[in-house]
Length: 365
Ligand SMILES: [Zn+2]
Image (cartoon, rainbow, N blue to C red; front, side, top):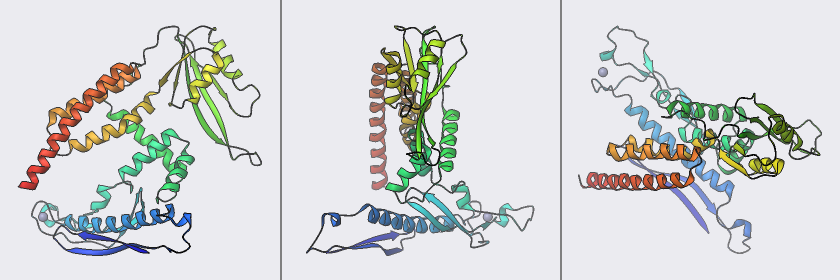
């Protein structure tokens, strides 16, 4: 049996072009289990080809329309025929990105060399925001090399080195801090309470070691009024890995039976290490960065809606609601956060209803 996948591209001025994306064949007699449906490699090839065709035709129309001068509506001259590569979740695509001469109507000084690239203004870092977000999200949950491996294993995006993922994760984190309405405040911790900030990392093992990477756990023990005490250990491999953590706790004056709070990235194994070291119940708080990263997709969705013609009031109410839910979760009040998220769902339904009415009205008009 054979299948063909075709893409119908319809330009803004009504031209229709049909382009072949992929073609598959499967035998019927002697079919094996491996040949059932699309394989991951085939799916990646289809996605990559589809992305290339969509992006190239989309950018062609975009750069052509960008040549129209917004002031006098004349078509500006194209200065050259350069290209630009764009990294996306579904592959790295090379597209035409010509520079456009500034229109004489807005070039009163009479310079002859003024030009701009509409694509460079649209995507200054040659990467789609979606790829940047997914890389940052995976970079926040896994080691940077592992995040890169996961992405290129499942998607046709080009192999990306871990330094790129690290830099993009840090940049997204800096943007989140800058755009956050409220500064992170200290979670509700009583004075004298022992707080263990704990995180895991992968470091490259020395050549000849049984594995390429080594898992390490690092952190610090804080008690109000005392200088933090840092610790580090390898959970697998050391004879008594938790001794370092117990030593740090004892140095901070912690005694069995006293309350301990662990702040981590949400990995269940990290507070469990603190529980094992103290042999006591441990209160676990997700750290501010990872809490914010988990709320980020909802905030991005709201940002997307805010650029459309949606009534401002329900949108502001939804934004306020999600910010309150974040603060409540940070302060360890899950029941109240749950109520706030129910309110957020109500606001979102109002926005969706309003959006549907708008789409219906625009289709009627
Ligand atoms: Zn003009």
